[in-house]
Every structure is written in structure tokens, then in C-alpha cells.
Length: 400
View 1: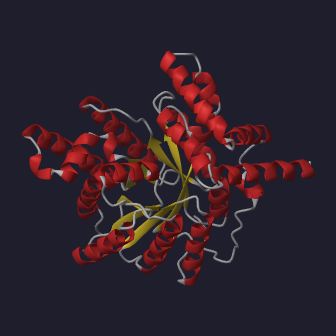
View 2: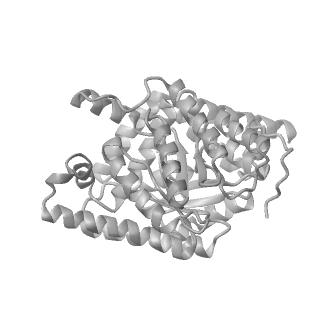
View 3: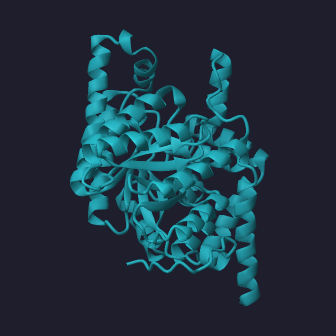
């Protein structure tokens, strides 16, 4: 059991805690990876040549597996993630098994992905303390084109398309029902705005069915870089309170900004993303304030690498007398990133989990490319990671 002591100060600069789980050799390897990722031109050229090598069938799988894949992924299967699960558990950090295979678009693959997510739920039920959540993308179990048409032109669906959407809805229900039966929380991940409304509707449909009797099983994801998301969160809570069910909310800033802006400009509709990052930060922190005030109907997971937002939530919990081990509040970061946040929060007693992507190396490459690109596009992100690792290496040398 985690202690509910509230007086430990959080220091996200404490690298001795952040990297205690890494040996000197592992830390050196991490240092080299982020040293390269800290150079934009290296990321761009490296990404180009890796894509080319994969297309040409060149034997680079082992190199990728031992470097960027090992940094950001848990393994190629649930079984091979077990070492990562156990390592995180030693530091009181949970694992969120994230089957990160992308780009499939046929019924056979949708069924296969559904079955794989069912396996993650089963593993979470067995290792309840170590795996607090499961997760899936609706676009992984159904056609993106179909989701877009359902959202934008629902009255023009053919009988075949209606049947396909029924199958998609049934898959969503199958996953959420199984999660409820196993008492495992499950996230519906956020996606692009032109399919997100459909995903929202599905998530609330599932919450009405499974978030009852003071249990919060199903979590929708709210992207606070969208100017309408804060209102969506408050409205969802109002409706849930009136109808007598619980809202699960994973709060994130957002991951599709360039794609969203480009599409809005091309199709000449209002950009759904805040004009300034400061506005996104403001809405994210407002969402934290709102959430702490509405824990009677709301459970949250802060999916963020932002130190200020994590500290704000911790401070609000203290101010409101909310135990740091309260199961209605979780923090989550990606495997291989922001260990200074994850490990220091967990060390202080907060509920923390890491997203642990897994899947065949070739199939998760789109995910890995995004991680590399995000580290260069997020202001100071790769530099921050690199400097913290550098600081810890210097600390260890001086103490040797």
C-alpha cells in the first residue's frame, strides 16, 4: 500500500531518484540516444534512412531493436514486456500495455487487434497492482474513413457501412465489457478532430453502461489543445451527475497539431487548436482545477510531461486534503521519457503509470518516428531529457 503522507516535497530535478533504476551502462546508452535526438538534423536524416532501409528490406532490425525500440518500447509481445513491468513495479510505477501496431485497415486486422487488447486486459487482471490500466485506439479496431463519414455525413451511410460501424461499436463494447468484468480501467485514446466526436459518443455510451456503482472503468481522452475540450469536460460531468454514472478522463495536451492545422487550412474551416501554446497550458491547468473540485463524479489521469501541471495537481490535492494515494487521480508518462517526473512522483507516493508500447519492431516504427519527431518539436523536450541524463552521469562520477 502506498502511504498518504502529504509533506514530502516534489523535486523533479532530483536525478538520483529519476535514474536510480538505470545501471551506468544503461544510462550511457540513454545518454547517447538523447544526444543524437537532441540534434534535429540527425533525427530528420536518420528517420529518412531508416524508412528507406525498411522499404529496401535491409537488415537493420537488430540495430533499431537495441536502440530506439529498447528506449521507448517494452518488447514485441506482452510476454517480452514482463521485464519492463517488473522493473517499473520495483519503483511503484504501473504499466499501461499499449499495443502500438498502426496502419492496418481490414476486418481481419481489426479483429486481431481487438483480441490483442483483450489479452492486455487479462494480463492487467492478473497483475492488478502492476498494470492499473489498459488502452486502445478506436481507429485500431475500425476504419478511419468510416469513422470520418459517420461523424461528418451520418445520413449518407450505405447498408454495408452501417453494418461495418455496428461491428466497430460491438468491438468497443466487447473491450469495455471485458474490462468491466475484470475490474480493469481502460482508456479510449484521443485521435484527430474529424473522428473524435464519434469516439466521444462511443466512450459516453460505454460509461453509461460500465461506470456505475461508484466504479470508473471507461476513460475518454480530452485533448486540451482543442479550444472546445474544456467545455466538453465540464458538460460531460454535468450530464454524468444528472444521469448517475461516473466520468473517466485522461487529460492530455494533444499530439496532432501540425496535421490538424494543415487540414483546417486546406478545407477552410476554423482551426480546432488553440492559437497559442499558452492557451493550451491555461486550459489544461483549468481542467486540473475543475477535476479536483469534481471528484465525486470524475476520475482523472494526467497524461503529461509538463512539470508545472504535475506540481499544480499535487498542490491542489494537498490543499483539498485529497490523499496522494487516492485512486481517482493518476499521473502517466511515456516509457523512456520524463523519468524525472514519473519516478519522483512515485517515490513521493502518488499513483503513477508509464505507457509501455509493444509490438513487432517493423509494425511500431510509425510510433517510434513520432517519438523522435516530438522530442525535437516540443520546445526544449529533448534538451531537457539530455541535460538531466548528463547531470546524473556527472553526479555518479563525482560520487564514484
